[in-house]
Image (cartoon, rainbow, N blue to C red; front, side):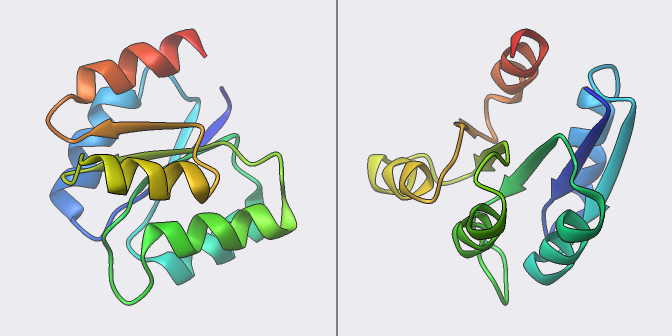
Length: 115
């Protein structure tokens, strides 16, 4: 994978994800909010977006729908502390390729290594 975009309003979580995913992508870029993510996606078209759901002012579900509206082939994987069925379904409805809890990031790594 050439370029991955990490989107999370928590800098520490972005740092952790970046360290875990650096062997998967040639380049990892970061955005700390939804507006940055959309602008970056429009300009750079990363191969994959790994994004939190609950961010302010724009949540990840809204960002995913916006990205999908102009690029239906966008690959978006959500990571969230909220892993209930309702949140998972909302992620799926927003166009997520996959969903992982932040308490199970090794599964995210394994998924990305094989997909």
